[in-house]
Image (cartoon, rainbow, N blue to C red):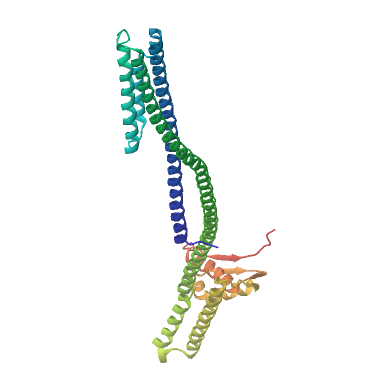
Length: 382
């Protein structure tokens, strides 16, 4: 089934739109996959920072408990630098936390309790040599520290729980995009292959069609050259026909006019014998014109492809030509001799025209002031 050019353009347009659509979907899937993976990494990083913050707070609480219970300053080593480390972790968590109202509220609460926690640490540590720090007061500090730590664990747990939920959602999205991205990639590849196959078939058909058209054009050009050649031949034959008609008919017509004028001009003064002779000559040349016209008609048919040949006696042909040229022969005093001439296969009027032209030219272009002798002979050529 041959598709029209309009249908092919429409198919290519639709294929291009579908291809662009699949490419856009594939790009969106890859972008979503990367974003989902980024969110998963971000959530895992938040959980890691929260665990580190909680570890720092637990170490600080352990240092406080050990110091308050033993009054030994060796327990304070984990406390040193813990505040700066906690602030750094809070800053990192803040940069990773989503700017939602719920997330910001949890982070602000966490930040407040961390500040309170370190405030509760700093007070007993700054008065550890104070004699007023009784065991009862130490127990109060421990209870407050435990309550603050429990609140911190609660908010850290809330944030970790929230992070776990977000992580589960992002991981689900990640699995979905991980599954869909190869599907769209395969669809895009298959559709592209389909377009390539369709385009290849269209191009192949177009090449075959072009090849056929070129072959047909070459054939038409060959026919045109042949027709032009035949036309040139016809034109040359027409020129030759025109020449024959104007040249060969002119001579007998001139003689008819000459002898008719003699009969007319002399009138009653012309002897009966001469009148009869002149009229016979007029009749002879008129018959000659009739024969020439018949020969021209035959020649025109021959030019159109009728190339029938027949047996022609050259002696008869030469004798007819000499008879027609008798007046020129007498005027020039020429002598024409011919012996035994053969019978050959040919076209009579063409052979008659050939000998007429040869003898007429010989008489016309003879050497002046000398006797002209024309001899016609034949011999067999092997």
